[in-house]
Length: 173
Image (cartoon, rainbow, N blue to C red; front, side, top):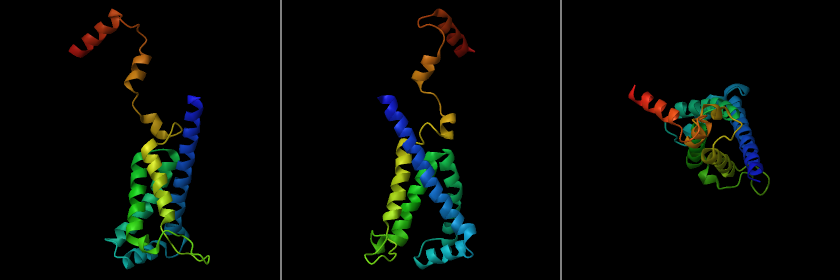
């Protein structure tokens, strides 16, 4: 049963990475390439709310969404990208969306621009920050083995003198 739960957890983390990474890439591409006034319009948008250094903020968010989205999909540097995405969503809410309320769509069906979408993206980033990328990730290739895994991989039998002498000679060299 434990292995089944681990597989479900890994699939869930993979789907979260693919979903959040895909959304980030789409937003970055839309802002950078797919619209004629993408980044300059975003700079103007941030300027009207008094965001500090709006030019750097706009380009930083765009680069984070493009590069970070690719890294999330691959499962590379997942904790770093997750914390940056979480901070991005918190700052987006605190600078641009807090006054609109939580609703993304108003009662009449018009766009209200609330912060519920940003909360969901931030919570997805928090899940990845808390639980990591899962077993289907490039991050897994570069992790250090736990001490119990190293002990399990040791071919010499426990209590053998050959293992202890080689360790003693290696430490004095």
